[in-house]
Length: 376
Ligand code: OSB
Ligand code: MG
Image (tube, rainbow, N blue to C red):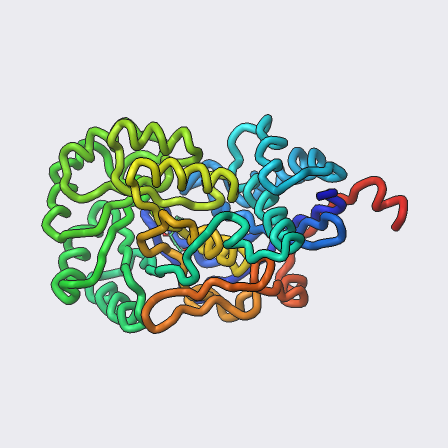
């Protein structure tokens, strides 16, 4: 694959409803899209950073910087055998997994088109339908949360995840569990607690939750291992897992019984597959986490979720939950039994709506290989 062009753009997209986590409220997304052209074939990737460095250290602006000043100049004009080679080429750049993933994943889309394979098949997936859950932001009161849960259970979602933080936890979970005794429920703390809250967190054991996601510090596997020994509820790590090495450290130390794989957080499809395999070999089930993605990121998440050890419902849900109009067609839709049918056409399986993308773009920059400039 001869990388002829890399185009980076920022889109401004308004969420249909604000999303509140323990670290803040998001109204508008600043989304970076990467389009790569190799051998005349165009592929798309999405950078899944937040606007602020509160989930992980990356932001829309750090990714813009790292892609513009390091990744795009490094890759433009290079010839590679497969998309997975991108990870090796950018290995000298430390961290910035989401920036790297945005570019690497665009090349996976291209490789899948060239091989006439759906992306899901190229990454090694086997499911033809994936299981979906929803992640619900923090609400003003338990009643409002119960109402939202009822709506999403009614839509067919197979697992409901509640965002929690100190002061907005037990009472909310209790209210939901009271109304929904059979529903698969989990909670996500986004690092809002410390080991000093152990006794408090033990109280969650009474609600037979599927898991508690990332209760402690974003970079602290060791403390999660201590906590897991003292609570019955399975810990699922999110923020702590940026590589297969992190997954191994977490598994070997007993820091979690489940792992949430986010394609951006681990650096793209090649790394995600390694994390998946490490978990699979150790009987740790995985599921696909979400970052309030637009359609391109969502499509990549669907492909990844077809790997065999993705046995728990992920946070990959319908486009219409986030956007008035998504940037892909068809939009991502969820069946009444809470699944998404995996596309079977080559590449991403969804078409990027170029006109809409253009309309939403607030800045754009591209890099063309020298040979391409010469030939126009
Ligand atoms: O921790 O999973 C998380 C959104 C932004 C940052 C972190 C997280 C989330 C979500 C939303 O839970 C998942 C989604 O619906 O995309
Ligand atoms: Mg999470």
